[in-house]
Length: 32
Image (cartoon, rainbow, N blue to C red; front, side, top):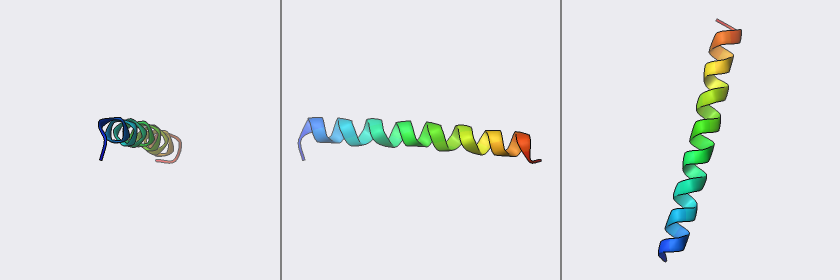
């Protein structure tokens, strides 16, 4: 696996992790 591929996968995983975390926190705040 090339370094560029690994970096791209890591950035995508981090981005989706942040989006899912924010939406989860928002859901917990809106619907306690």
